[in-house]
Image (cartoon, rainbow over all chains, first blue to last red; front, side, top):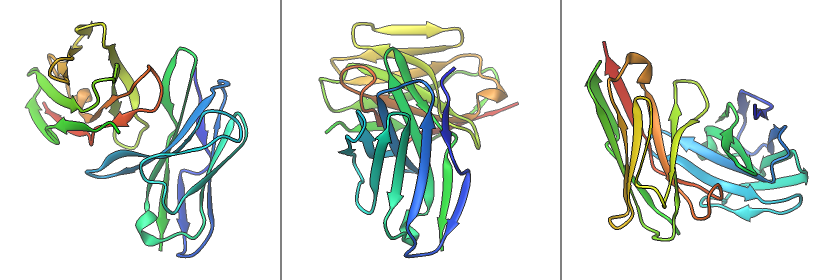
Length: 111
Length: 112
């Protein structure tokens, strides 16, 4: 069974802090994604990666960056957290004949 | 890029009734349409999907229909049960499992 693990379930950070959200998948998937989920706005794509060291902007990349140094790990970085980045962040991966699988999510609060 | 509209945003039904959620998409090149169910506090999970070479697909109490000409697809749940209560997301993509564009979600509440 595919496992996508996000390192933190809940995070509280202060405005201006640098924040790292980590995601690891165990199925050797090529493609990994970061989504943001907000009530009434659904799932919006922030960044995705098709391979190690490759990254592509999604629909709402502003204020975020990503890192993929190893195939199994995809990190989302908030360079300077702001209150409007308070949200649920979902990592996902897909590869081969497997559909998109999500992690459990990280609920980030920026105060 | 692709745009997916989903209706209704909330849906309340009585146990045993049927529920229908509808989505439209904008890019005629889209050919993969999955549906995800997200229970409270849990991750979204795939419940059914359909590809553009098929008009309808069923899996027990759930079914999805696709009308490529009109660019819309629908999720049908029959004999609803309280455990069907969740948020349902439709999505569309070009080329199978590549980048999905999601609708905004439908909160389904099934009352006993």
